[in-house]
Image 1 (cartoon, rainbow, N blue to C red):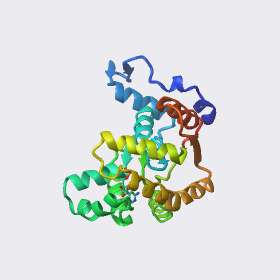
Image 2 (image 1 turned 60 degrees about the vertical axis):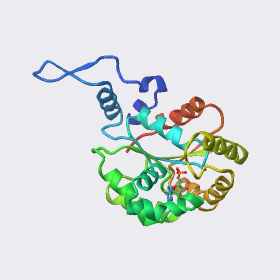
Image 3 (image 1 turned 30 degrees about the horizontal axis):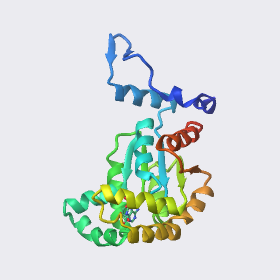
Length: 240
Ligand code: AMP
């Protein structure tokens, strides 16, 4: 029954029109638009919020799609690249430890990234829902994340893998580097980051495929087209 209820068109994922909810023995309670959306999604998913990971090489649109999917499902968008950049800007010990790796396009040390993610997720109001972007990035991180998630009943419902051809990735990142202040968005660094992804992150596809939670999405086309592809697949999930 639950999966039948969940299989709806994406239009139906919009919050209901009414701006108040009748409560027993009281007049109508006023809810903000955000609260209405969260309540609507919680009812739809039997009190559960989406817990997902976006897996994609640099330039595939992870950040953009992560923010859009998080907004649609009323959950937090947690991007480890952003968390690390924030630490670097604030000159914290974590930032100082990570900055060299990031500038070279290498991966920051696992314990440091894991601590940032755990702190961020542990701070979420239950039921915690999130789109993780950029973590786990290696099998070692995925195993640690799975161990922590199992212990806290917070394992992923879905892992969304965006597929974009390498020539388009380089083009997109170099273009982004011209308008952003990210020091690692250069032609040399992007190639290094793409190859590092192939080596360390692609094995994650099999890791999550074998757990039956991998959703593979064609990441080419407009931002809206890619979001719709992701949404169609997530709408069909039965969150448990
Ligand atoms: P991103 O914004 O996801 O491209 O990440 C930018 C940089 O942050 C990466 O090139 C890495 O140096 C570092 N980083 C982000 N996520 C991770 C992670 N899960 N493990 C290790 N390093 C990471």
